[in-house]
Image 1: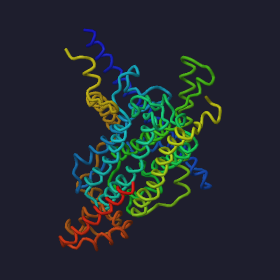
Image 2 (image 1 turned 45 degrees about the horizontal axis):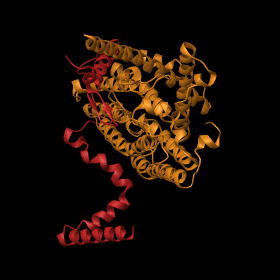
Image 3 (image 1 turned 30 degrees about the vertical axis):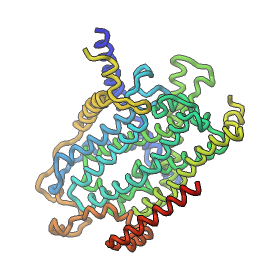
Image 4 (image 1 turned 90 degrees about the vertical axis):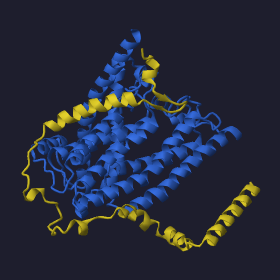
Length: 362
Length: 118
């Protein structure tokens, strides 16, 4: 009977976590969207909309007609936005949000998913967009969907290099790593910041990987300069051209939640630090402080990887997007990987100190 | 009785974890939430009117065959950005078996040299 009780308890935790995180993702996703729009407007010398504008946008879309084009495949056309939002919400469960352990790892011992799973789940919202685009029955949407597919193929390569490098560095013992067990799980990654495992050369490598991940983020979110699949001025919104009303609102919410997801992944991989241990706080004050600190970290990442880039750069053509990811960014990621690989050799053979020892942090 | 470990760790290697059952529960709940949110939106639209016609920036809608976008367009970005590579590869792609065997021998030779040096 005990086992059955445990199963029921675990299922209840998962159900509650899903509800809480869905609301968290949607609320903060829209809030950050508002902040991003405000900051972008100020950078362009405009006043910009109020921060609550995305909430109003969603409200407005819910009052608009939900048009299904006559060329569309109705059930796929309606289902795609739902799949996008559902897939994105499910990723939140596997990420350490607000300084807590991933909620889909009950008690921190039993793990339900790892970083590789997150990498696959990240494809769901993009695939939902592609499916919705193809189901629209519009040439603009078809072109947009094809571009989205090409963009996905392009950015997955450098993204995979980053994730594998970090997990390999943490998991290995020979290459100066920390010998962390289950290095692909986000619980292990956040508990053992990767900066603690590297020397000077590895530090450079990690900076390069962070730079690549920051440039992968706008493509994941279909933001300028990697928004060729939507390209309003060219193909009238691309894969979203035929969407309106509540279906468009679903994609709008998906985009908002995915922004939080991407920023949370960067926080988990590169900035998993909390303030509470530094200030010696425990229990509820520690949770509140860490949660606020997490929100600030997310905001800083969104400003750097979304707002700053989309304001300062123009849209790239699809061939330029492919080239950017497959040549310069893959090469930078590989250089980062090699730096981290040699870093271990330098530490082992020549006794190079770790970066935390140089700064006296350990 | 199902063992708790069987339920909680359905698939696991030494480094990877993936529990489809738990993901399934998450998906069902998230689908319910998304469906409730979607249900708050307006459902109606005017069927068989101008608004259900495909948006083509004011251009006339042609026959389906004429408006079809080829699936090979997916690769256009790759073909365009790696034109220099494909041009070289196309020249090598002669369709002559002797040429392919020659390439095979050359590549094997290079591998042997590399392995010999290392």
